[in-house]
Length: 172
Image 1 (cartoon, rainbow, N blue to C red):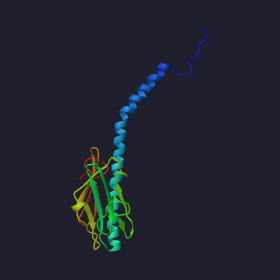
Image 2 (image 1 turned 45 degrees about the vertical axis):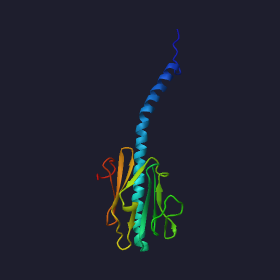
Image 3 (image 1 turned 90 degrees about the horizontal axis):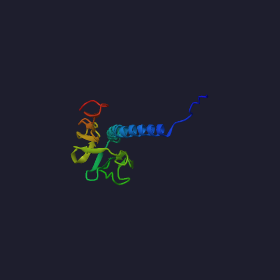
Image 4 (image 1 turned 30 degrees about the vertical axis):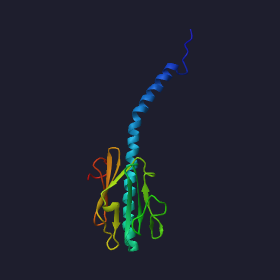
């Protein structure tokens, strides 16, 4: 009698393997989305920090007041901000935010999906003075799910990031 080895999978083995993989994929999807949201949140916080530091540097370089105006539509969960050296700008309109006559930096919900933004800045605007780069103090809070990052602006114009829910930053 001859003994032969099978060279493949039976249909039952294939179905069981696919079922196990499907269960693993369904259980891993929420944590993967949470991981992506946390990375997007870090990116938005770092971007805002960089833009605030740029606004301060431009105020010193151009010897003029530079502002960062925030527009928040809480009903539709949309926000944006833009830099300007000619007073506040409407970041909702293309080309409305200018520094030294050139289009300025900014960001919005289109770039950072699923990220929320709130601020306690006076009139929703951070204003940097040309003399020493001082600013009106305040906090901008970026959030994604249960995670939040605070972008804190001091009266001296210094910008720092902190978070009580995201381990990448010191606690607030």
